[in-house]
Amino acid sequence: MKISDRMKRFFKGVSEKEWYDWQWQIRNRITRLEDLERIVVLTKDEKDGIRKVLGRYRMAITPYYASLMDEKDPLCPIRMQAVPTIYETHKSSADLHDPLGEDHDMVAPNLVHRYPDRVLFLITDQCSMYCRFCTRRRLVGQVDKPRKIDELKAAFEYIRKNRKIRDVVISGGDPLTTSDEHIEYILKELRSIKHVEIIRLGSRTPVVLPMRITDDLIRMLKKYQPIYLNTHFNHPKEITEESRAACERLADGGIIVSNQSVLLRRINSSYVVMKKLCHLLLKIRVRPYYIFQCDLSEGIEHFRTPVSKGIEIIERMRGHTSGLAVPTLVVDMPAGGGKVPIFPNYLISMSEVATVFRNYKGFISIYKEPVDRDCTCPTEKDYESDVVAHSPDGIGQLFDGKKVSIEPKE
Image 1 (cartoon, rainbow, N blue to C red):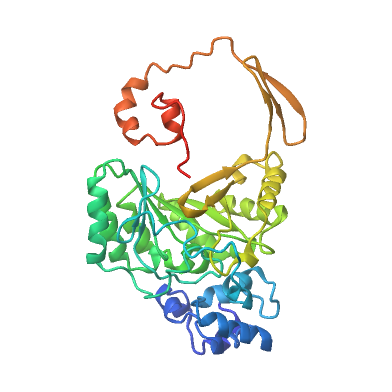
Image 2 (image 1 turned 180 degrees about the horizontal axis):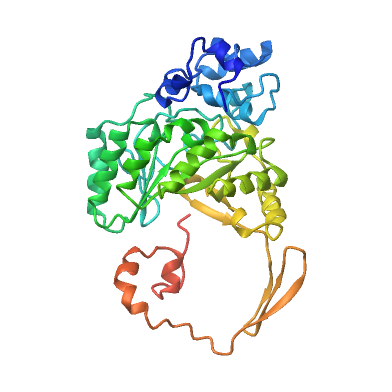
């Protein structure tokens, strides 16, 4: 996709080389109303609303992502994700400042430890674009810079001391807005910790800044394999020549890419839109992983859908397309409850003799249970010392026979 004439008019004199330079894109993000109204048509009420929102929340749109917006349609799914509206000034009774309880679970500066074997490592507060539905909007964009090395040392030390941690999710902000050198320092430190097996990057740059996925970045990441990358496509219109090339470059480099969509009202709250998105993702070698129910962050209730809408979407996809194309619907529970998967109900009844199911068409069938129900695995002892060290608390204690009941504290 070439630079559009509209973008050339706005960024006068921009060359192809500059346009495809990710650092130029970040330097030239659209952050002011005066710049935005030269790209899209805004009514007086829309301008007034944007001014009010910018008094509280940042706006930043990469020129690339702005070029995908329909300049005349306020319901353009690209524009709705990028351009503030007056609705962000409304605070719902359900809104929470820290909806996922991350501050409570922060065990060291920039490090959140909620699940037994995983941590969330926040290495920057900068994003290339500030999505209007951001869960972490209370934090992002305040400094717009990566965390200094000294600010990360306590997190590394915590990970080294806690041998249960085998999975580190690097996020922010967007970690790929930092330099290759900064990312490599962090990866090298994590790979020096023997019990860290999995490293994941959470980045929307393949969607909003695909030119960030350079050959140099891929060469660097390959040195620290296995590396996984979770990205964030929400609509089919985001899959362009550039984003396709970025994802395929990652896949060719051995980086496993998964997608985590957020269910957004009037943007992708349709099984037709979501099914098309997931089909296109598979074509560019990106695995549809999660659909997140929109979180309870302040000022984003206008994006939220009923939970039933997500279940309907999964119901209308499961069985009607490849299982590879069907992501898991998840609600990230408020106050640090963690991710809870939600599925349509296919189980009708169960006994020791048989289980009765329905399929995606409503066809009902019985599955005969085996006579011998002993499921002891002889090789379990070969892995017990490693796996039990990471076994979860809570329900796992019931299965392991450590407890006969668990009572919620509240």
